[in-house]
Image (cartoon, rainbow over all chains, first blue to last red; front, side, top):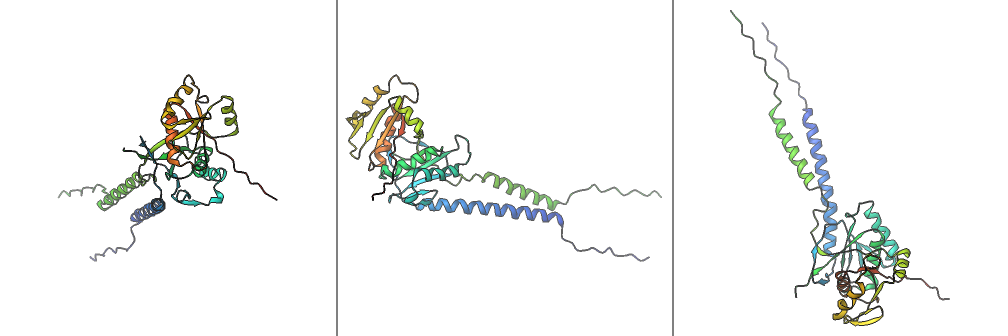
Length: 146
Length: 150
């Protein structure tokens, strides 16, 4: 009797393909997220400003929108400089409102990092703009230990 | 002769797939846990402040309610309360009786007017004192108008 050998046809396992695709998707999602956020956080760290000191401070919620007024009285919205010409309550509030979107109350906090010697001429415009955009003002301050 | 029937092999999924599955699950949960975009940001300390928007209606309402007005100058030793020059150390003492008996937030509104050169350090300290005394801080920002000189 002649026994025939069973021929195995080479093939790519299709089950593994889905796994590979899923892993690739996850990989790119993680990569995109970390790149975006870290770039902004790094840029914000480079801005030079010194917090004003007050008697008591509290822990603040983490926010996605930060307005910084630096030592040189330059205004940055999420590390992007707002030129002096565009620094009107209306323009700034429109930009902040865009970023806030239709987030519910409690999630509309805007962090203000204002240099301790910044003049009222500038910081009042910023505060007013946040207020007009419907944002909740949160001042980043340092505790006075004396 | 009795032939024994071969036992039917129960279907078992290949064990290699299980490790893949476990690995994918682990990655999925790791991504879910770190998907909060705010997680990278450092928690800060400071102060929350409720500042009503200075719309025309509110300005009118504030005017009608005859709110307290605090005027800040670059000189950080004195402050004006309703036009009365007051030393900083007596600020809370003078402000508290003015707010006494006022229950509605519109009545408790304290309009803060600052000179252009008032530093933030002074402003934040003063607004903190107003809030501590029970007042609601409202800003009075002067509008910039462009005037063309011929």
